[in-house]
Amino acid sequence: MATDSTHPETLVLHAGYRSDEATNAVAVPIYQTTSYQFRDTEQAANLFALKELGNIYTRIMNPTCDALEQRVAALEGGVAALAVSSGQTASTFAVLNLCQAGDNFVTSTDLYGGTWNLFANTFKQMGIEARFVDPSDPEAFRRATDEKTRCYYAETLPNPKLHVFPIAEVAAIGRALGVPLIVDNTAAPVLCRPLALGAAVVVYSATKYIGGHGTSIGGIVVDGGNFDWEAHGARFPTLTNPDPSYHGAVWTEAVKPLGPIAYILRMRVILLRDIGAALSPFNAFLLIQGLETLPLRMRAHCENALKVVDFLKSHPQVTTVIHPSVQTGELARRRDGALAHGQGALVGFELKGGLEAGRAFIDALKMLYHVANIGDARSLAIHPASTTHSQLSAEDQLATGVSQGYVRLSIGIEHADDIIGDLKQALESL
Ligand SMILES: *Cc1c(COP(=O)(O)O)cnc(C)c1O
Image (cartoon, rainbow, N blue to C red; front, side, top):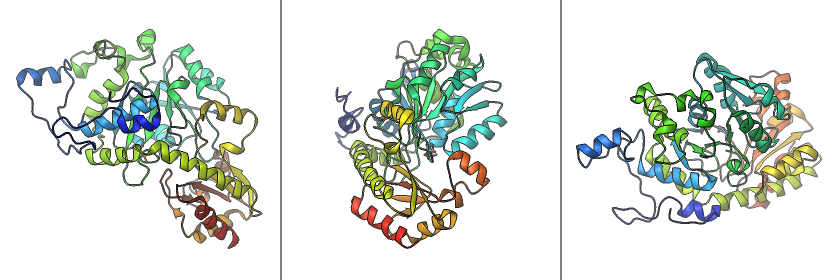
C-alpha cells in the first residue's frame, strides 16, 4: 500500500500502485498482453495451484486491472475487488457467486432496468428466484428470507424515485439471519460507503461516475471481507463445499493464508475463468484516469445539482422536483444516514404539460445531451416515458416513479450558470 491515508481524494491517486517495477512509470501502464511467461515449471505449478498468486492469463488477471481493483477496494474500505466487463457483469457475478439453481435471493424493487430484466427473466431461466420486495419496509427482507436465501440486493440511490435505500437496517436484518447485503453504489460513489453501513459486497457500473468521461463500459465488485461465511456455512455451498472444478478446493479454507477474500477469489478463479467477461486493460486504464479525479468531480456534480434543484423549484412549468435534498421525514432520515458526503447529481422533475411537454423540452435542449446514460462529466437529460420506460403501461410507469411529464437529469460539471441557462431556455420554449 503506497499510502495509509483514509481520505478518498488521496486513495484514488495513491492506493495500490506507486510506480511500475520494470520502468518506474508513475502513471499506471497499460499492460496490453494476454499472457505472462512463467519463471520455471515450479512457479507455473504453484500459480495454477493457487499456492502463489500471480499473473497467468489476462482473462483472469492483469496488472492494469489490478491497480484499478486495488484503488476501488481501498476507496470502499474493502479487502479486494474484481474488475469485469460491465456493470451488468458485476451484478450478475455478485449474485451468481452465491446462488445456484434452486436457490433464491431477496431484492429491492427499485432497480436499474437492466438489473430488473436480469433478475426477473434471465436468472429465472437459470432456476434462480429473485424475490422482489418494497424497500420502504426493511422488514420485508426478513419476511421473504428462507433457508435457500443466499443474499439481499439493492441500489443505494435508485432512479427515478431517488429514495435512498435503508442500507444499515437491511444489512442488520441480514447479519442476524446470516444473509449478506450486496449494494449497487453506482449513483453514489464517495458519497456513500455501503460497507461501513454493514453491507458485505459493493458493485459498480464503472461506466458511470467512476469512468466519468463516457468512454468505457466496465464494472467492479468489491468484497468487504466483513462477512463470516463459515459461521453460516450451510447457506453458502459455493464457498464452503469442495469445488469440483478446482480439485475439491473449499474456498473459505483455501484463502486462510491470504485473508478474508473467499468471495472475491472464487468469483475470479471460477466465474471469470469460466464465463470470461473480463475488462480489457485499455478500458481499465481509462477507468483509472476517471477514478483519479472522482472525489473532486462528485463534489462539483453535487454542488451543481443543488443549484439546479433550486432553479427548478421556483419555475412555473415545473410541478415537482425529485432529489434527496428536497425529501422530508423518514426519507430524509435515511438520506442523512447514508449520503454523508453529498446528495448526488441525479435530478428528476415533472412538467405541467405531461408527455408532450416532456418531449418538447428534450428537443429544445441545446447544451445538455439527450442520452440514456448517467454519471458523465457532461450534463445529460432523458424523458423516460417516451424512451427507457416506453414499453411499460402508463400504470406500470407510475409504479416505478415515472409520470408522463417526468424528465431525468444527470447534472455534470460544467459551470452551473450554463446548465441552468440551457434548462431555462428549453422551459421557456414550451
Ligand atoms: C448503468 C447501470 C448498471 C449497468 O451498468 P453497465 O456498465 O451499463 O453494464 C447497473 N446499475 C446501475 C445503477 C446503473 O446505472
